[in-house]
Image 1 (spheres, one colour):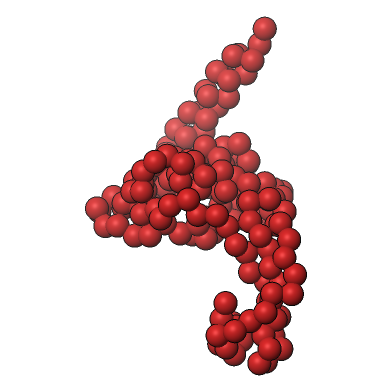
Image 2: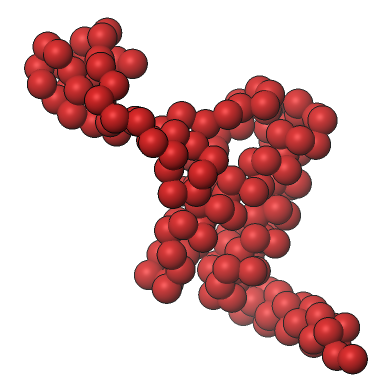
Length: 160
């Protein structure tokens, strides 16, 4: 692992342990050249995923981009970082275990919407407004009505 401070090609692992989500390994590293200390995370990757954009362009899947989207939608919302990490890890696991190496960007967006719906209503609406390219207040009303109808259906299904 290259040192992010001096770009030295050799660093030493000082401590390894499971990360909070138990889906990755947290490693504390030190650079013998400059003495810089930093943390890395190691995850299992079942297969190389490629995202097929609406335009047909193909790009490598970027877990960090998905994480940034969640963080942006959940900005200033009372949701624990662990819950966000678990939601993103769950989406990545579903994509990797789907058996497909090429994933449509719409599929990733739908998984994200579903996960955000379970995390925070406001974040769900924020993400949906960008994902579905809202241009009017009616778009917000439609998604809220759709969300409310689903909640009503779900609560009726739970009744004895």
